[in-house]
Amino acid sequence: MKTILVCVAGITPQIITETLYYYIIEKKPPIWIDEINVLTTSAGKEVIINSLLKKESAIFYKFLSDYNISRQKIKFNENSVIQLGGDSYIKDISTDIDSAIIGNEIVNFIKNLTIDKNTRIICSIAGGRKTMSVYLSLGLQLYGREQDILSHTLVSSDFESTQDFFYVPPVPKNIEIKDKNGKIIKIINTKDAKIVCSEIIFVRLRNFLNIKDELFYDDLVNIVQKKVDYCGTKLISIDLKNRALLLGNKKVILKPIEICIYNLFLSNKKKCEQEFCGDCTDCYMSLNEMRSQELYANLLEFYKFIYTENSGQYERLKESLKKDGKGDDFFSQNISKINKTLKQHLNPFEFAVYKISKIGKYNKRYGIYVDKKNILS
Ligand SMILES: [Zn+2]
Image (cartoon, rainbow, N blue to C red; front, side):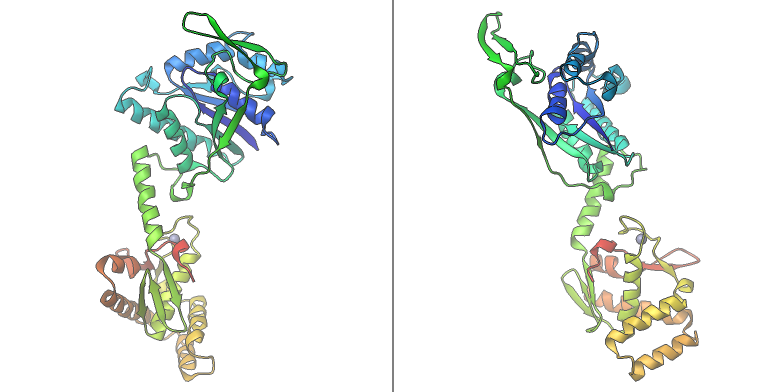
């Protein structure tokens, strides 16, 4: 699996090499970084390239040779330093609009990186403007996968404040700390430097989104929020034996055949192939689809929970289904009765969710507006 380090950075390129050093040298066991991408502003881009990549003596090459790593092993070049803001040429993030443009761009960048299943991304929030770190984290929250990591780099304070420290070199060296006038006030040695990346756990919301959608950050958040709210409250379970439908905190008793039919719709939802099937209607059924031997067999299975196999009721249902004499009316009439009972027991909002809904003008299809993860039984 290819690991990509994504850093946000301003005019402190140190954070990039410090994070790289931590993951491939310091961490036990190490995580190899195959590629680095840096998101920055126009001012940052210049500083980062000049300091890390421009000349043969640049810090990134020095790091590689210090640790005997060949240049082909880590993909990091001038093209890896991405200037945010595109055509808007944002030198720094100082307005609300800058913030929105850049935020959207960062979230999109993360989304695109997560399309390839064979990658892991490590997002380092240590550098850059706070706006950038926040959006990097939120982007990962929206699109991050199980293997992705959100990371913050912590450096011991003396070393954090000097511009001459980029990583812990294999051979220790002194660094002079100077005041504003250039006078040496302290000498520190790199053997005392500590770099740690603290990994932050986060909620993964990816399953609530369609990766193909091209949406702005605000819209993404609205969609996910609606879905999360919906999932949290609309739990549904069925107690067939007692003919009880448990909807949120309400209990509705249905007639034996009705509860079995309702259960048919729930079990169909559970089989839906959509990751999030709350508002999906792919798993709805037409009356024609309902009149199948497979569905009849399921219906009889459910019926057995209420009446035993030897009972007259069970035999009668079995016989009538065999003859296929049930017709469209059997389902449509029972659906109306179920909905009528639900309407009596539920408030209008609950009814809208739990009723057996009908979609389509001509070939009408029926189903329940609930996500399969919310079906408890
Ligand atoms: Zn579905």
